[in-house]
Length: 164
Image (tube, rainbow, N blue to C red; front, side):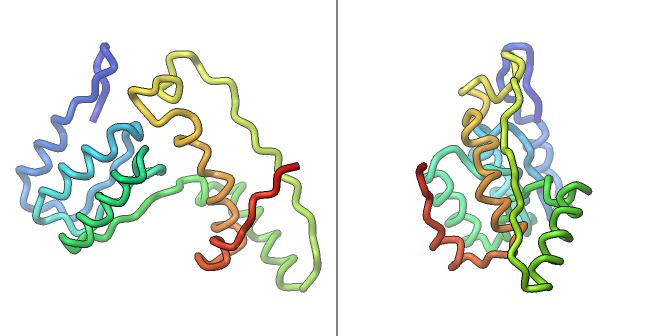
């Protein structure tokens, strides 16, 4: 899937995908605003068993719930992907955290989360192409807690946001 000069999303590759009988997996890494439409198109391919979608799944809770429901009804495994968890820096940090946890020691890890200045033509600055910076990269602070500290879903739900 690509964007043309007018920044419109073209779906020619999904149309071709749906004409093939041998495809079982789909990986969607388009701007967030296109995820919902692209996932629905892929679900129409009866051979698809797994859909892996780059974060964030959609830019709307109703769309997300709809996608999850449609995938369940079609017995399709739906996964949301975070590439950073495979980066060498993240792997090293995870080893450090696990070492602290293994030794039953209290440790402090200071992380400064910043968003670099983006080119004004970047898709994150165009609401029509993505959900914006909050949807595009705002999910990292929560996902890093889950992925770095092996927090289970029930514990993650209990985390309270503290305003200082």
